[in-house]
Image (tube, rainbow, N blue to C red; front, side, top):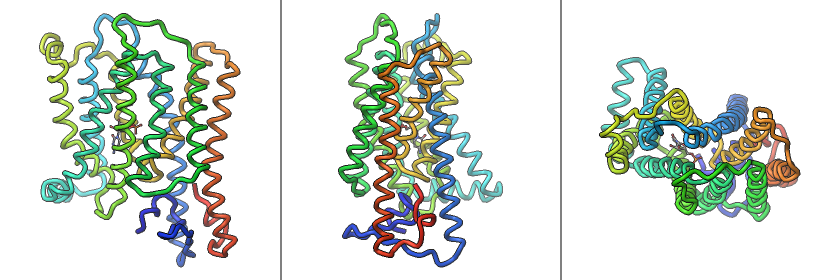
Length: 366
Ligand code: C5P
């Protein structure tokens, strides 16, 4: 399989940049292409909804006034544990009990080099997840959400560098329009009052570093996932957990040893925090599925639409009246999606003109 196959099931770009569309020889190929396309759309819609709630939850869990504020490093560790349990369960669904143990042995223990490959994104995600909690504690919701969108660019830059996919000028422009649109939407948010001890500078540095790490780890994981080794997505995540669980546990004692020793690991954990942790875990696995069936850039479009939706949601919940800025921002986000995907349609149309594409229905699949 070529490196572009996962990006677009029917488009193959030759090293010279020409588009070559093979006519599917059997209907099974076409059906699986359609099934994959349906899956891609479904996961993008799900990620959009999931993220809308996630963004509100993480900020609410950090900014509300409570007697005991939970330790964020513990939340990150528990998220990793929850993700691992879910992935083990899903791997077990695919195998009989005997083959399940065998699969764990052969694909994790007996392939140390392959397991080590996922060590890099696993470690980076731990640092990134901790930094996002730091950022959410030091920045107001709007600033936090705008600056987190820098990952739109970091993912694109690493797509070009690591995956060697090229983006044309229209697509870069579409990403810039997306960033501008999401930022305008955020301006709709009310300025939350500054909480004692908040340092916007620390928050800003944390979020910028987290975005660079997010872009790199996401693309690196995409490269591993779409590489040649036939390891399932869930097994890849179990491999990641082998590193992520111990290292996130060590991070608790490096950063918050005093609080945890004095009050215990679950200090400040109430139903909202448990919900945030569970939702964060589900979100992480949704990102993994999205990277498999679509890619990191499509994932960022989904999360941007999520921001528009969560702002609209908060209008209903908190009687927000949409400002002109919000409407302009939302329009830009929607426009950027059409702009970015119009490139794919243009490539398909060019291929058709050259007689290389069988039909629109078979070739268009974003
Ligand atoms: O939006 P962003 O790409 O930065 O989000 C990445 C999130 O997805 C992180 O919380 C990371 O732990 C999670 N993730 C995961 N499993 C993967 C890839 C990402 O849990 N295979």
